[in-house]
Length: 443
Image (cartoon, rainbow, N blue to C red):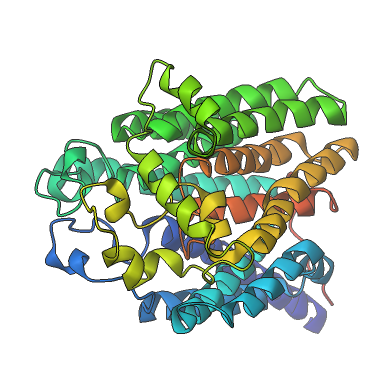
C-alpha cells in the first residue's frame, strides 16, 4: 500500500513539476515579446529623457526568472552544463567584463553587462524547460499566437497605441505603420518575422492549423508594419534555408549562407566606406541612403576610427550625452539616432575590433559549424531548421538594424536561443514526443 501511495505521490509531483516548467517557459517568452510596458504611448513627454538603463523592474523580473530557470533545469545536468560551457561565449563574456573597466560610462555598462549575462543565461536554458520537441512547439506557438492576436486587437481597438501616429514625438513620418504591442515598427517587423519561422516549424511537426495561422498572420503584420528590412530579409532567409536543405558540402553551404551576408554588409556600411561601392549602390533602383542610414553609418565610422581597438565601452556610445547632444547638424538622422542601425558596426563602436572578432566567432561562425555538425549526426531536421532560420534571419537583419547585446530586445533573445539551440542539437538527440515517466520510476 505504501509503495502504491509513494508511486502516486511521485507521479503527482512530476505532473506539477512539468506544469511549472511549462508555465515558466510561457512566462519567459511572453515577457520577452510583450515586455513590461506594451502599447507604449509614443506621444508621451517621457520619451524626451535620456535612457539610463536603470529600469529596476526589468532587472528584478529577469533576475527572478533566471534564478527560477536555473532551479528548474539543473536536474538535467548534462544538458545544463553543456548549455553553459560554450568556451567562445565565455571568452566573449570575459572580454566584455574587462572592457567595462575602460568604458566611457562605467555605471551604465556595468548594469547592462549584468542584464546581458542574465538574458544569456535564460536564453541558454529556456529550451530545456519543455519535456520534448512537441511540447516546445505547442507552448511557443501558443505564446506567439497570443502576442499576435493581442497586437491585432491593439490595432483595431487602440490604434493610437498600436499604430504609429503623426503626433509621435520621434519619427512622426512613420504615421500609419503598424507596431502592435511593440515600441517601433522595425521591432514589430523583426519579431513577427521570427514568428513566421515558428509557425512553419509548428506546421511541419503536425500543428498545421495553429502553425499556418501564425505564419500567415505574422507575415501580414510584417508587411503592414512597413519594416522594409524585415520584409526583404524574411523572404531571403526562407529562400536560403530552403536552398541549403539540398546542399551537403561544407563549402556549398558556407557559400550559400555567407554570400548574402557579405552582400548586405557591402550594400550597407560598405557603400559608406568605399566610394566605388557607393557609386554602384546609388545607381540601384531603390533609396541609396537606406532611409537615412548612410548618415548614421558615416558618423559611426568616424567615431569608431577614434577608438578602434577597445571601443567606447559596452553599450555606452549611443547613450552618451556627447553623442546625443554633440552633433551640430541635428537635421541629419545621425543627430537623433539611438543606435547605428548595424549590429556589427555598433559592436565595433562599443567593444572595438577585439570584441567584434569575438562576437563574429560566437554569433556567426560557431552556429554555422554547429548546424553542420547537427545535420551530419542526424539531428532532428525540423528543430534544427527552426534554429537555423532564426539565426540566419538575425545575422542578416543585423546588417540593417542594431539589436546585438541590446538588453532584452526580443530579436536579440531569439538570436541567442538559436545560437544555444544549435549548440545543443549538435550534441544531444531531440526527443519528438517523450512519454510520461512510469509511476515509481524516480524511486
